[in-house]
Length: 199
Image (cartoon, rainbow, N blue to C red; front, side, top):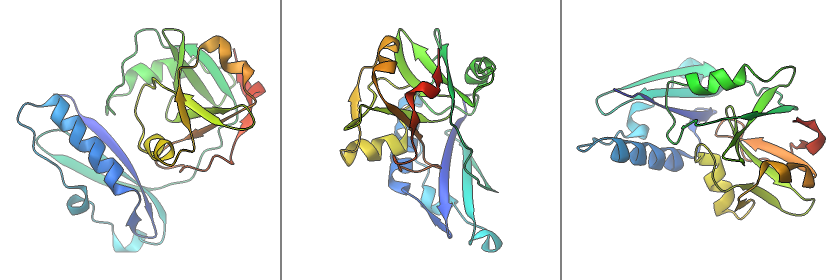
């Protein structure tokens, strides 16, 4: 039976953007099980009192039968350089707990901090985050990511990023890139030169 993963940022004892995570969990269960049972995130997330002042990563491993919740302190990793890799037939349309297919690709990063996965000639995601590219005025995000991230959904809703098919050959027409996910947040000011992407 497949297991799925949800990572939720806990800030000062408060789960962040829980409705977006709940929507994704509900969709995952509905799409993968005929008789699915909803998991109520606000009921199963019980933050230890001694950790309430920290920035935490709440990690939930779940399927249609149970959910395992854990908490770890979180520090943002600095991701400045990306290596372009061909994802071939990779499928990660749900947030699977098993990341073997992504981990295999990650080994191709060489001296870069992370990878930029290409599928069918189109840009998708990094190994753990969605991405957007700027022409100096607007921000564009791949229309067909590997995974519909919760932070990506918020940024689209706020009209901060525009979905667009981005071919691998078009990457270097942009000036900057920024990566984001539920833990890193939606700050597009933390961006890097497009020259930091290595073909």
